[in-house]
Each structure stands twice: as structure tokens, then as C-alpha cells.
Image (cartoon, rainbow, N blue to C red; front, top):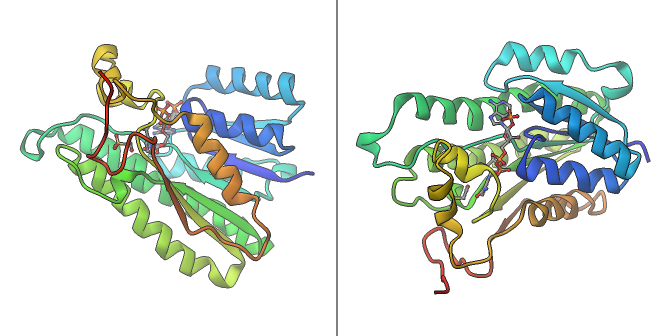
Length: 253
Ligand code: NDP
Ligand code: 8X3
């Protein structure tokens, strides 16, 4: 099997777990992120544990020129991408709209919406040429329901939901499947980023419950992308068993 998956945000959390799971299942991997040393460490692990070949692309998805150059730089043997996982993303801050930091809003919009758009534009071209491919957008329960202080992060994930639906229509003539995976509470580095390095505050969303793990989401992505060719999974929303909606959570203790 020589299928190629490109994963953005492979240096941590969902992206890293997805890289490991697809490597275990025989994929070749293009791993992306801004932290070069983490990419190198992951490439080593993929080879050591699964004998998997990988290609590293270190760039910032907020920068369209960087995205374009990264994809254009792929060697011939890495150009035919079968699966694109648009996973890189973040929440920065959690505040009422009137108190939001402009720089935080811009970073979320530039990463979660514009970065995903840039990647989709550049990678889908090759898929269209091959008349084959699968695009997976990592959305969120925050793209299904707004919650207090979620404002701009929710807006970016609602945008991902709309883009997934619209891209699915655009890709229809090209035999490219498009799927959204929308996780709920999930413990990765996400909260540490949201709370700007405050490790104590970062633990609070997960107190008194068992959150999803990055591996739970990786398995869902694998399920969605390993269906027979005639099946497209439009979207999957998954939460911990202790979570029913963005706001309804049951906690012990
Ligand atoms: P992590 O913080 O653990 O991982 C985020 C990844 O995104 C990192 O690999 C980071 O890589 C990458 N990234 C962030 N900004 C950029 C950028 N400008 N350019 C390139 N890469 C970037 O969080 P998760 O694994 O939890 O998040 C992955 C996705 O899942 C996100 O889209 C998030 O919104 C979504 N999600 C998360 C949930 C959660 O509760 N954890 C729930 C629902 C959805 P690097 O820093 O090396 O660039
Ligand atoms: C991350 C999940 O509920 O913190 O997308 O927004 S939540």
C-alpha cells in the first residue's frame, strides 16, 4: 500500500495521533507544523515503530505563500496525495466579545479559516488532476453550537462547517470525498494554547470527567477515510460520554 496522507498540525494532539494510526495502517505520511524539532521526532517514531516513510513540511499555514511553496516543494514521489487532513487549528483566549483581543481573533481566523482554505486550494488541485482524494476537515462541537465566551473560536468552526459542506459540492464532479470530524471535549495541548500557557486553568474543562483522547479522534478519521469508495461520511460529531452538548456536561465530585 502506497497511499499518502498529508496532516496539518501533526506536531501535537489529534494530528500526531492521526499520523501514528495511519502509519500503523501502511500509509506514507506528509507531516506538517511549525515546530521542526517535533516533526523530526515524529518522523523518527513513525519509522521506528511502524517502518513508515514520512516527509516533513515545516511552515505556518497562516501564510499563503508559505503554503503554496510547501506544497510545490513536494518531491514527485510525494505529490499524489490521497488524504488531506485539515487539522491545524486553535482557540486563543476565552472572553466576552467586548473584551476580546484583536490579535487573538486574527490568529484564530487566519489559522482555522484561512489556513484551511489555503491548504484545500493547493492540495485539491493535485487531487482534481488524479480524479481521486479525500479531504477531512477537523471542525468542532463549537462549529455546531455557540457557547458563552466562545464567540470568535465558534465563528471559525461554524465557518469550517460551512466550508466543508460547500467544498463537498465543489468536489463532487472530481470524485473527491469531503468529511467533517467534530470533536467535543478533548485533552491535548488545545487548552494550554487557549489559556496562553496557564497549566492550572488548562485542566479545568476536563475536571471530573473522562475527555476524548486524540487517539479517539484519530480512529474516527481512520474510520471515515477507510469506507468503500462509494461511501462518503459527511460528518461525525463525537463527544465524551459525559457530554451531551457544548454546554451540557456531567462531572463527578
Ligand atoms: P493541539 O494544540 O494539541 O494541536 C494543534 C496543532 O495545530 C499543532 O500541531 C500546531 O502545530 C498546529 N498549528 C497551530 N497553528 C498553526 C499554524 N499557524 N501553522 C501550522 N500549524 C499550526 O490541539 P488539538 O490537537 O486539540 O487541535 C487540533 C484541531 O482539533 C484544531 O483544529 C482544534 O480546533 C480542533 N479541536 C480540538 C478540540 C479540543 O478540545 N482539543 C475539540 C474540537 C476540535 P505547531 O504549533 O507545531 O505549528
Ligand atoms: C474545542 C472544543 O468545546 O472547547 O473545539 O470549544 S470546545
